[in-house]
Figure 1 (spheres, rainbow over the protein chains, first blue to last red):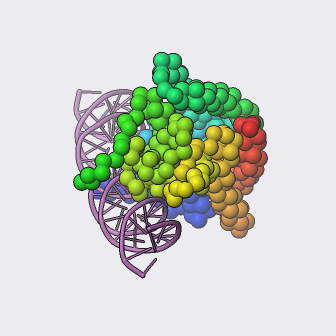
Figure 2: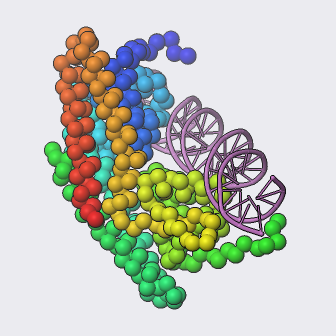
Length: 165
Length: 165
DNA sequence: CATGATGTTCAAAATATACTGAACATATCG
DNA sequence: CGATATGTTCAGTATATTTTGAACATCATG
């Protein structure tokens, strides 16, 4: 298609292993595989890479690469680097576990926790005018939920402290 | 199809809301929706339920119900209850957050952490006889990984302590 | 030991999720 | 401007996961 051939330096074994590690991490965190791959290639690289560098080395599409970079930016797992005289955006992997974890927590987890809290409040309301023999039992259960909620809210920030700098 | 009609007591709004809550929790933990539904119906119920009770009230298949109960058993989110004179297995929801969380951690998370550790060790080995200008840089990166690994290993148990009884 | 009740398994179908690539926006530069 | 470089979006496709339902195992009981 294009007669200016794209230089594809094949990933060596070390790079592949590192990328595979992050692909599995992405999987644990419920993120698309491509997000793990992109973070991985940036993590092993000793220099900043642009969208096309990532795309070509990983052999994935432009769309995936763009999406993946956006997600990684969204919780601060990568940083953009300005390179004078170059129009492209370059990226490096953020290596502070604390920064990544707290970005992830606030962007990807906190919203769920919050909407869970909303729903529990709603359940509490429904319970007010509820009639059944098991109402007593249900009240206890809902209190249990509120208790979990409270603990989850406290645990998240504490967790981040433990992860340290 | 069957002329002995199955008694389907339709879920009331409160029950539906509680189940919806657990469906979203399941989603956060990457578990099938049906697992959330089953835990939910057991959680709201004031009496133990058997497979068919769950299946009928949730209107899901026997296969899903069986699988879902197996998963919930696997990390201790539900307990079986013996009911004299009844051949069926009955279940109740475990309500100790500590028990559920630690079961989940050891069954669903720990294996991943362990295999991650293996991979990092392998990467360290590959690095030994590696030649490149950027070897210095890579050594640092791998040390970073080992550091993360260590902290993850310590944080998980600590997290469980924080969740308390 | 035949029967019906209970639960499990697994191949196929349904559903949800991620990826691709081409069309589009935007900006730079000659 | 027009041409080129860069990045984004999104409809369609590919892939992965979950659910279904029927066949199969197991077992208590008359």
